[in-house]
Length: 85
View 1 (tube, rainbow, N blue to C red):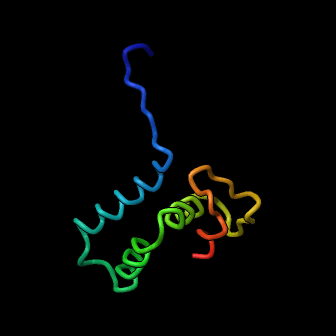
View 2 (cartoon, rainbow, N blue to C red):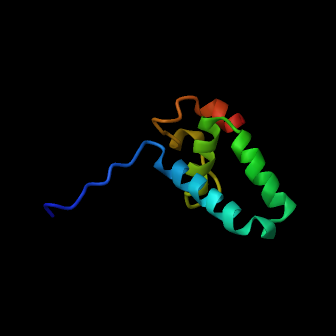
């Protein structure tokens, strides 16, 4: 497909997208959020960058158990610290 622009994703594209979704919900529907949802957003935004990355990575995976040996992400060099947080 010559002539079509190529899309280059950043290493944290998934976190950028998640943040955009949160902003979109807050801008348009913040009054509909329960206190627990507002607290989630506040808590999420207080987390370190690596912890937020890990949270979104896991939230986007299928399943409910994620052994650490299968969680390898270049952009999360301190996986243990991110998981502890």
